[in-house]
Amino acid sequence: MLIPKTNKDRPNLLIVLGNPAIHSVVEGMFFSYEGVEGRRREHRFWRALRECAVLNFKEDMEKPIPENNEHKRSLLLNGEYEGDFNIFFLPYFSFPTPSSGACSGVTGIRKIVGKQIFEEMKEFEFQRFRDIILYNNIENVLCFQKTDVLREIKKRTNCEQVNSILNNPDYPVYEIDIASKRVTLYYAGPTRLLLSNKSKEILKNIVADIKVKNQIG
Image (tube, rainbow, N blue to C red; front, side, top):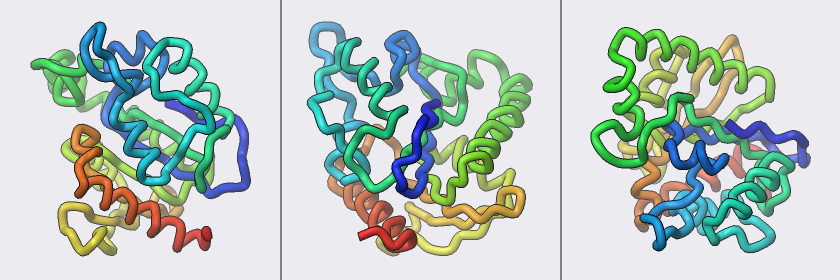
């Protein structure tokens, strides 16, 4: 996870992902790259955040090399990017899995550790999520994983759907209560589809909705 060290007088936004890929753990930065050896490229996640005005690095961070990944981490921790939010990043499940194949993603965790251990992990991971919300005054959460993460958050909080983005029921907006703190929870779709026109439109409208609620711009 990435918790900013400084506050740039911007509202806090927590971006919640599924779980880290093994190669990104090795690189020290999630979404460190995509593509095979010799044909690596910037991960679509960073491109989508840039194109949808979530955040933009002031310098070229597109080349997926170890030096850039390390520097990108430093920039994120210190809030040194263009954008309207202090962004916190949380892979909800901390257990890493391969980026592809039978044991990829969050479903891969269940296959590797078994159902019982996975259920025990869920309690710990929710506590971590809750603590980040409470200790950092976070009022807006952007979730990119529906099957396990969004479901877990909804199950473990007092949750009420209040809206949907572009009146699309596939992209609900919830108000959740965590220890009497009200938080808006957005679902933005899976990261693998982030560069589709539909996904970018959804993400742009989520950003616009948060900005209106926080009187930004």
